Image 1 (tube, helix red, strand yellow):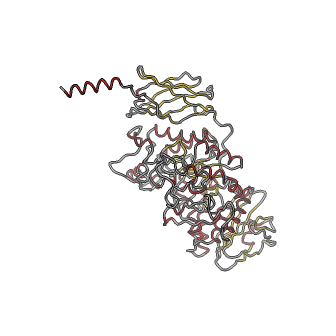
Image 2: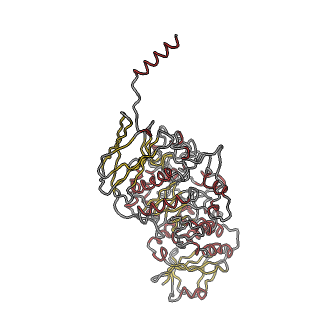
Length: 613
């Protein structure tokens, strides 16, 4: 009797308590745009029991077409049609379920005018890690609600770099001679540890507050454009961070690839084009997790596909972005990635996308190249790809383990396989990046090797990329951990004893490397012959490699002498077909003139970039 009375009292008290108001916790994308070529938009709406609601709107030019519900009642996917007559404004979406009614004001913005700028071989891209480049706003070093706080003494911790720091260094980057900036991911990474690198996204639509706001990213892009520079955003479709807000309440059971126990990918991206690959190996490549803290997204779910595609379209239109670098490009479902690349191109013709394809040979890399006709019929629609084979070849050429002729033949032989790429000028080429031992360290900390390697990368075919700090030959060994590859840029923090920006505290070697880099990059800016000219090279001999970039109007001769102690005499007769009509040349590095191209001398461990007249 006592228990029954207690239960009755509890029931009465519960009835008297006000009901918890039904709320819409989240709508993704957070806004959309008029003037898009594809009039379809799918909203992911999240809120308790929102899946039981219907949706209507009376906004002119906006219609609710269909609703998609999953087994999770807390999600509702709303398919809208936004026609040409829709104008910017606030779209009122009305949600009803029986007598319950909710409204949500959805922003409809104007799409930026003008064509996509894109990137091409006239550009030089500067790769930087926001957390390690410069701290321009110390007030966001520690942010309430963010799991990992500042710890600059930890190589794998947060160091405080941010978007404001990049903005404050744009004039330096412009003077260096780069024309574009590629940021490692700056989206929210609210992970417990090693969140600085950005590759464990926890919110696709929000800048990590320790880097700044979405509005500060807008400012960064706008300020870069004022200086004639472009911006590349790093994105990841393959996986998310284990602390992504989805992981508390997945939209659908098949939203991510799930196994009975943690199952790692085999990292064998060659299985996609391997005619003998087993289905189990291909499955593990695509569906296995990249790491324990990186849940693998299921792009075969059409809702996941649409969500990811729309994130890229939103950032392009929202920020007037110039390019996207897609991390681990071969790991997601390949057909979905091809559809994504085509959708971006259809919506923003000429927009730049470079996919990270990590192979050691052109046969595998070229499978993903634009307009490549593959035996299995696959077409990636990918405008550009990272040329890892050429990167590895430059390491082998200049690290000093081979005799000079064999070493330089690594470059010659690699380029001789360019027939595998329909458009090799689109390849992004580089000496190193954030995932490998720095080129300077790999080549025995040789300034001569850096100069020769940079001379090659800046004059051969492709779109060069420079890793931050390379201009002062920063060191970094992969064997010591990734944090050591991504050390703080000198002068980016208040009180730094050494500052690249101010030119203080630099060693003579660092000053020499910086001036050398500036000279080549700024010379390259205006050299159409390097951007689009043809390439002709000659078989390396006696430790010397010679090639030409040429068009109808001019020609540049590049000579690399890898011999350690001895100079070499260059006999122009061997290169007569490329020297015909030219009598003198000027080395753009030293300014010295070569009065007789029939015979001249090049010093050991030297590259000459000779403008022919």
